[in-house]
Image (cartoon, rainbow over all chains, first blue to last red; front, side):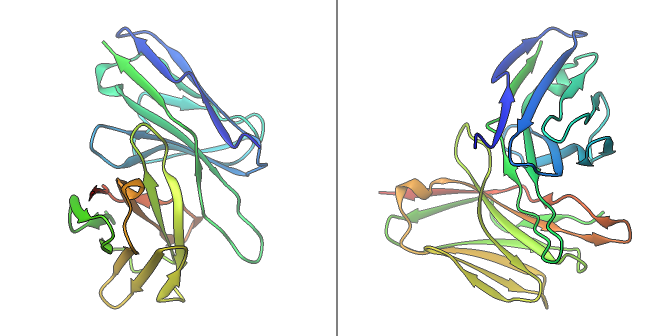
Amino acid sequence: NAGVTQTPKFRILKIGQSMTLQCTQDMNHNYMYWYRQDPGMGLKLIYYSVGAGITDKGEVPNGYNVSRSTTEDFPLRLELAAPSQTSVYFCASSYLKSGRETYEQYFGPGTRLTVT
Amino acid sequence: GESVGLHLPTLSVQEGDNSIINCAYSNSASDYFIWYKQESGKGPQFIIDIRSNMDKRQGQRVTVLLNKTVKHLSLQIAATQPGDSAVYFCAENPITNSGNTPLVFGKGTRLSVIA
């Protein structure tokens, strides 16, 4: 299994441009998440999804959109890039087991985004 | 709102010594806690987890201790090695009326191992 994969690894955007960060997992996980991590800081949740067709806002959703049309993919869309969105973006997934629930999240390698 | 915090932002340890990384949590309803390790330029990697019905759990060279009375979590690394140098995050899973909620991460502690 490749686990959680993210593309691109790096990207530079101009203010006002738009882009989609791709995230795919091959572990058949039902939960998927998007986080941003600013330099020297912890992870802030942007959006998450508990299954295909279901998404919910996290702590910092403004300026972002998501969709979850399949179990495997969870793209993150930036419509009008702003310098405040310069960060490293991590996608993660987890599986909720019946009976014994587990919350371990598996993270992708990250996308480093710079908006200038 | 509820938050997960850490006592120390940085920790320097001599190679071979034991490391202890502390974490305070404020949500008494949290029932699950995780420690992650993040090396430079990489995504967080799972180390060990513990549920609220336990107070100690051991892995390979790592031990997590949970003190629910004072809402404190710690990660102990035995015989610290240079490869242990990283940022360590604790995370909690609060239980709410809406059911499962995503993990809440702390700011992290940077562990530097001195050879």
